[in-house]
Every structure is written in C-alpha cells, then in structure tokens.
Image 1: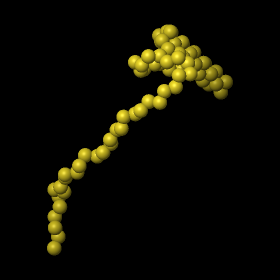
Image 2 (image 1 turned 180 degrees about the vertical axis):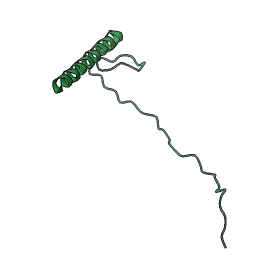
Image 3 (image 1 turned 120 degrees about the horizontal axis):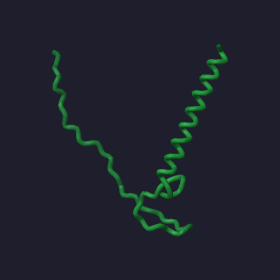
Image 4 (image 1 turned 135 degrees about the vertical axis):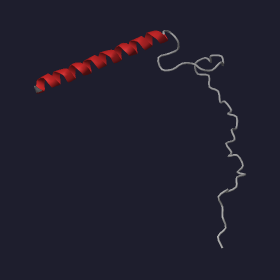
Length: 79
C-alpha cells in the first residue's frame, strides 16, 4: 500500500515538473527575440557602445510628511 502511495506521489511530482517546464518554454517563445535572456531595456536613451560609462544625476526627492493640523476631538479635562 505504501508503494502505491509513493508511486502516486512520484507521478504527481513528475506531472507538475513537466507542466512547469512546458510553461517556461511557452513563456520563452512568447518573449521571442526581445532583449537578452536576463532582462529587457526600459529606457529610451540611445544604446551606448560597450565600455561607455555614464554617471547620471538623480533628481532630489523630498519625502516630507504633510504638516499635522489635527486636534484631539475626544480630549476631556479632568479636575
């Protein structure tokens, strides 16, 4: 009985692995020749020649919290 259970578990794992590999293959075919295998180009800058290095300046981002103008509406003074 244990052998039947192990056989079923092995078959289920094998089917899941086959489905996983087929999905990977399908996604690679969908992507086609766009970009390299590792990533895609998302900028609109012209493509630089190999070895050309640029230092880009990042605009300053101010992450300040908005001013707090709230009052505690449930405040009661106890004498």
